[in-house]
Length: 189
Image (cartoon, rainbow, N blue to C red; front, side):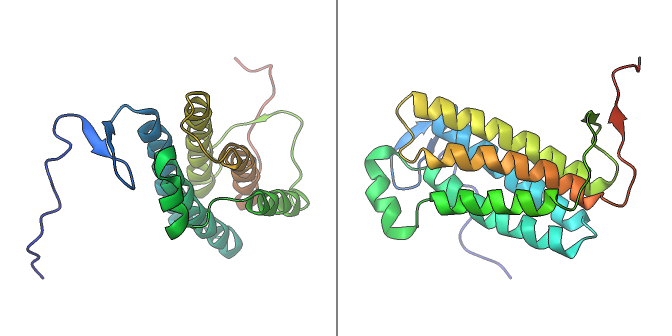
C-alpha cells in the first residue's frame, strides 16, 4: 500500500529537532539525550520480550515499554509546554514507582541471589534485559542532568528510572532462575 506522505522530512538535516509540543532544539540537547536513552531502553525491552520464554516476564516488559513511552513524552516536553503535555498524558506518579517496588519485592522473593557480581548472558533474554538495564541507567543519568539544568518538571521520573534499573536487574535473574548463575568471584584472572 503506497502512501503520499514520506517518512523523511529533512527538518533535522541541520542537527535540530522539535520537542513534543513545540520548540526547536539541537539534537544534542539534554531533552534529546534523556528521551533518546529512554527510547533505546524501550527497544532493548522489546528485544528482551521477543526472546523471553517466560510469560510473566514478557507481560512485565510490555508494561514497562508502555510506561517508558509516557516517560519519554515527558522528557521530550519543554517545561514551558508542560501544561499542554498534561492535557494529553497523565504525568508519571509516585504510585507508578511504588508499583515497581512491589514488583521488585515479588520477583526477589522467587530468586536466590549470590553474594557476588553476576555475569550477564546466561540466556539471550536475560542478556537483553541487562542491556535494557544499562540503557535505563544512562536515561537516569541524563534525566538528572536535565533536572540540574532546570529542564525537568517532574522529579518522579528520576525515582522511577532508578527503581526501573533495579527491577530489570531482578527480572533478568528471574528469567534465568532455573539456570546456573555465572558469578564473578574476584579470584578469576
